[in-house]
Image (cartoon, rainbow, N blue to C red; front, side, top):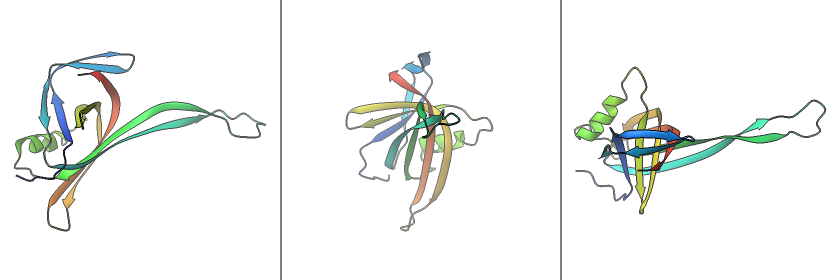
Length: 144
C-alpha cells in the first residue's frame, strides 16, 4: 500500500438518485469509492466576461457571464487496486459519461458532477507511477 500523507479524500459516486432544481443537484443514496493514493487536488473557478461594446463606445463594456469550475486531482497510479482500475477503465468508454466526485477536506465536503476533460499517466523522478485527471463541472450538488 502506498501512503502519501495527504489527508484529503476524493471519492467516485456511483448509483443513487439525482434531482435537479435551478441548476443545483441533490443526491440521495449511491455508493462512494475512494480513489486511493492521491497527493494533490485543486478546485478552480472562473467566470467569462461577455463583451457588449457598441460602435462608437470609448471603452470596452462587459457583463459577467456564466461561472466555470474544474476539479483537478493527481497521485500515485496503482492499477492493481480495484477502485483505481475501475476508474481508469471507465475512461476508455467511447461515449463520455458524467461522473460525480466528492472531495472531503478538513471536515468540508464538495461534490462536483461533470465530464472528464483530461487525464495523464506517467512516472516521477523516483520511478513512482503517477496519474492526473481533470473534471469540468456541469453541476454542483447542494446536499449529499
